[in-house]
Image (cartoon, rainbow, N blue to C red; front, side, top):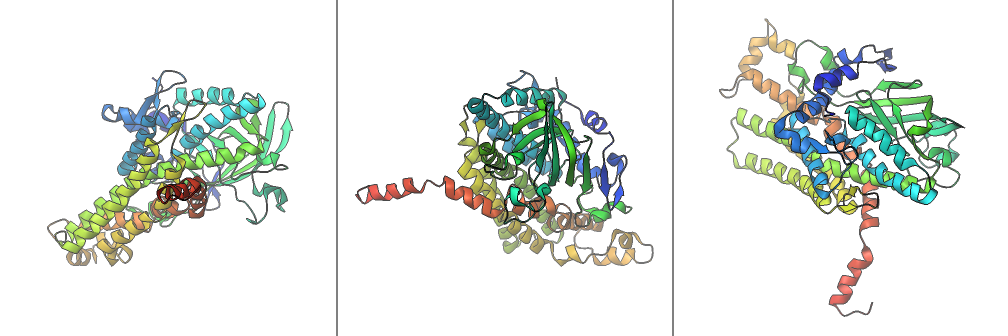
Length: 481
């Protein structure tokens, strides 16, 4: 059965890569204290897939091979698959309280499955068969695959072909008999370093004359010509300090990479789009829909952890029975479950593409993500309210353990019968989720991940079916259509 253990996954990523952090090259990245929590998070996915109690949600039967595979490598075959995807993402958010990094590649694959099929129908190409061969390898080896969409974009008011620097959008700079050479950069690359492979996509709709930018392909993340620069996150260097209390979520974490493609060769068998500009928008829109559906699961799971921490700190403070505290916790639950509801709804109303795979309801998926740009901010605000100002003024772990002054902190931070150290640990966890490293994948990513709020509003407008709604009223009022 093609399911890696966590240990097998860890061994599989121990390979040379061209990675920089703080201006210096990083060797053996899997041992780096800033990076290791993000690897632990991915290992949790492999761990849960091995556990009998989670196999129904963490694994699926591949329609390509008939084998049981990790659900993150599955192509959706029913609305039940779409629903289980969202439930799986919530579970992983609950277990790690951070971004678990595999959703982008998962959503890319499901978008490409139908788009490559439709390109072949129109142009008599073989992209769909290439993709299936490529993805069978992914499934059989239980590989982690990243998705690379966001370009640096240069001047946002200028089209890709008109940019002073053509590399502002990743593009094919040379077409060869055996493949293409690509150049450019992809930013906000979630889990790219921890992935075995990545699939590159265009970042926006393209027009005639921009064929070189209409490129989608698979690439090994350690391919020659790829340089990675590790993204900086708030409070990240706390992981370099001794001790764990000041880190907050010391076990798990997310990862964002700035990736440069400096004349990277892509063989023909890994090319999945090459100049078909009219399909670029379809790929972008379908990927975005799948990824906006994802946020109805992952952000909800992290929200569960934050709500739990808020309830617990209220108990530690001795105010958990106060009516206004209960009311704020209920508000957090209502907001979180509303996000989950739209994630489940867009999945339950999914439909089958001609390629055979299932896709979510695009309108509700965009409504889901639009809510995600708002509700986690309010949940975080309420968490900060319940935690109190100490989450941003508390002394360090070294002070807490100091022989000279530690006794003062243990004395004056004492509240209920709960050990003071547990209160310290919990406050740091809330700080981490709302203000620190994990806030990148909870609050900030809630705003910008899967497209800006305006991107969802544009799609909501396109999917709204205004004429149908107008006709409803015309029928009720006997207005001639």
